[in-house]
Amino acid sequence: MESGSLDIGEFEEGDIDQIIAIEQDSFPTPWSANLFRKEIASPISRLLVARISREGGGWVAGYLVYWAIADEIHLHNIAVRRDMRRRGIASRLLGEAVRCSRLKGARWLTLEVRRSNRVAQRFYEKFRCSVRGIRPGYYTDTGEDALIMWAELCLIPLGTCTLEGMGEDGNA
Ligand SMILES: CC(C)(COP(=O)(O)OP(=O)(O)OC[C@H]1O[C@@H](n2cnc3c(N)ncnc32)[C@H](O)[C@@H]1OP(=O)(O)O)[C@@H](O)C(=O)NCCC(=O)NCCS
Image 1 (cartoon, rainbow, N blue to C red):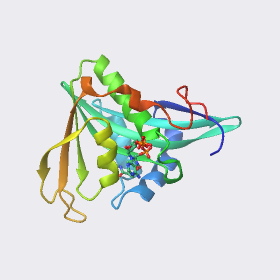
Image 2 (image 1 turned 60 degrees about the vertical axis):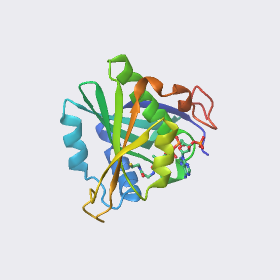
Image 3 (image 1 turned 120 degrees about the vertical axis):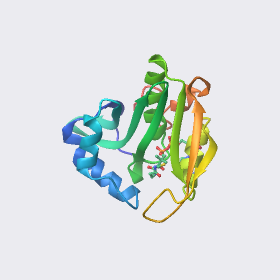
């Protein structure tokens, strides 16, 4: 992997083209740039971006969108650049969302995931999420069911946020 350090931060307009490229490579029905912008404008929505920075510039490695509603956070979107997967980047993103939400008094994490997306389910299971229900035919593009997963935020071990292969400080 290229050298650099990983930072988790808020969305900046200059990230949008790279986010859209990751989105289009990751999902059968990707969000548009307008949908991302609409999300950012919403007061309950937060878009976190994982950036690899190095001398002379940086680039987007992944992102996460969640809503904070009452004592719950709802994960709406998460993806990592294909060539950067399995290095703990999604764990860093979700770990940051969990850490901030706990500080604000949230208690629950919920999300929907395609029944066929075993990789994402394994990822969420690592964050102590378990299946609590099914939304039949939830995904209109394929008619696939969604599994509804839940976790209690205080039970999520933030040790899962260590960026593997980069060291705890995020240095590559
Ligand atoms: C799901 C996704 C975001 C995970 O990102 P990532 O940065 O690769 O995840 P991490 O490296 O933090 O993985 C953490 C844990 O998730 C699980 N996991 C991640 N990728 C996995 C894979 N390919 N196979 C099995 N388990 C996997 C493992 O438990 C892993 O821990 P480990 O490496 O110690 O075994 C990424 O695969 C992705 O972008 N997928 C396409 C978009 C998508 O499906 N998003 C979810 C929509 S609901």
